[in-house]
Structures are given as C-alpha cells and as structure tokens.
Length: 327
Image 1 (cartoon, rainbow, N blue to C red):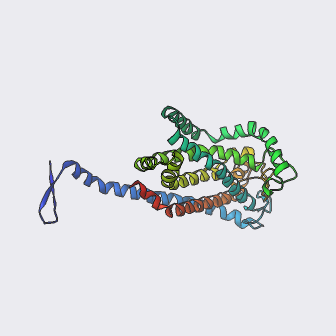
Image 2: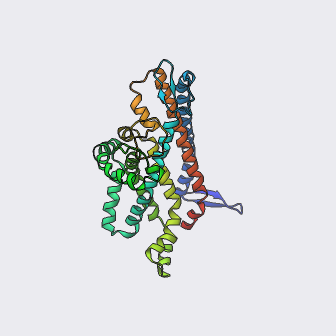
Image 3: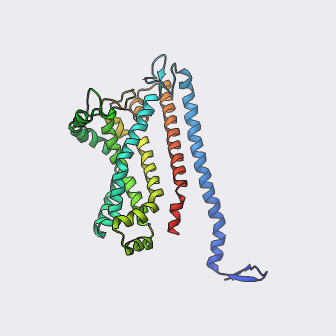
C-alpha cells in the first residue's frame, strides 16, 4: 500500500507504508507527551495546594516567627515553632555531602569509562548501579552502628589540629554530628552521581577523543579537553539529582543527627537536624497543630528543592554550547 503526498511543484509523490504509519502516529504521541507534561504540573500544583491548606491553621496558631524561630514546640497549648535551624541544617548537610561525593563520583565514573579494562568496568558499573538501589535505612543503620563510633577518633583529630578553622572548632566533639550525617548522605548520593556521570562520559564523541590522542595528547589531556567539557552539563544534572535526594533523605539522617535546634557551623559538635528528620521524629506524636507545623516545614523543603532544581536548570542552560560537540 502506498499513499501520495504533495511536492513543491504541485505534483504528488508516493509515501511508503512505514512513513505513512509514522505520520499517523506523530499526532497521538505529541498529544500524549504534552498531556503527560501538563499532568506533572497539575500534580505538583496539587501537592503545593495541599501543603498550603494543611499548614495555614498551624501557621495562624504559631506564636513565633516561622522563618526565624529556632525552637520547635508545636504541640504546646501556645505553639511556638520555626524553620530556621531545620532549614539551615538541611542546606548545610546536603551541600557538604555534595562537596564530598561529587569529586569522588567523577573520579569513579572516569575510571570506569576510560581507564578500567572492559570486564572490570562492567563489574564496577554493576556494583555502582546496585549501590544506588540500596534502601536508605540500610545506610542509616550502618552509619549509627559503624560510622558513628569510627568517626570519634578522626573527629577529635580534626578538632585538635584544625580547630582554628571555624567548622572544625567546638568545645565538645561527639560521634553523632553534622559531619557524620553528611558523610552518610555523601555515600548515599555517590552511586547516583557516579552512574549518571559514567553514562554521560561514555557518550563523548569518539572521533574527538581519537583526534586528541593522535595529536600527542596524554589520556588525561584528552579527557580534560574532550570528555569533561562534553559531560559538564550531565555531571551538573547528576550532582543536582544527588543534592535533591540528600535534601529529602529522612531515615538515615533521623538516626544519626543529634536532633538539635541550633544554628552552628561547627560540624563536629552536637549540632545538626534537618526538615525531613524532624518530620520523621515528630509526626507520630504530633497533635493537629503539630502535624500542620510539620506539613508547613515540608512545604519549605518543597520550595527549597524547586529553587535548587531551577538553579541547576539555569546553570545547565548556560552550558548548552558543550552539547553541540556531539553533533
């Protein structure tokens, strides 16, 4: 079967059956994909409306400033709670985990994609994908059982010899600290960043890699000139995806963070909490106002995550020129 289509000269040209079927399928696919995008926006808007509606009564009953208050006593007869310390702990621990995990993840991805033998690369890639699927509670239990006692010695060493740096200062060094929580978050997000970065690096144009090597570049120079510029947008996307998971992580940080409501840059002391950990620790015993307060804090986390993703999209849009090398 063949159909005809109009040419520029006004005549008709035969259209093959496969091309005809593709043209018939373009319209439904376009509508389905557009509908899926609209549905996603509707779901996000519905979540935001739900959080706002459930948070308003608690915010109206609050006797303190929700954005600046450092205490959390939402179940009292006169509720007094604020998001200041929780938002601070969420942002600081997540960015600290990102700083720790990203360089290691990039190194692992480059080793798998450009240095390791094929069999070893396949095995390591499988292990990385497997680690990305491990439940967060496993990391939390490992952190509280093994990492917290193990880090007491290194934390004391950092405090003794680098205590003049504000983040390593403090009069008392404890095991359950912001540093240990950030290390657990870093270990959790490292497989995600490494797996995505590995796939991005494998997509680098082979002709450019071979051209750089043919001109006398070393393997590292080839990676620096041909692979890293090409993969930069993908690495940024992977890092932002890992940051989003770190910000929303609940069980692991709830087990490790000391659950204090203070703002301090001393990551070795008993300081540290997050919005997600506070929700997990307090939701079961909260009354109606307390649940509304926790939902209000979840709304703040929702907004912070959106802002982080918008910032990531803006950074990637400024690096579009690197995507053209694949053309």
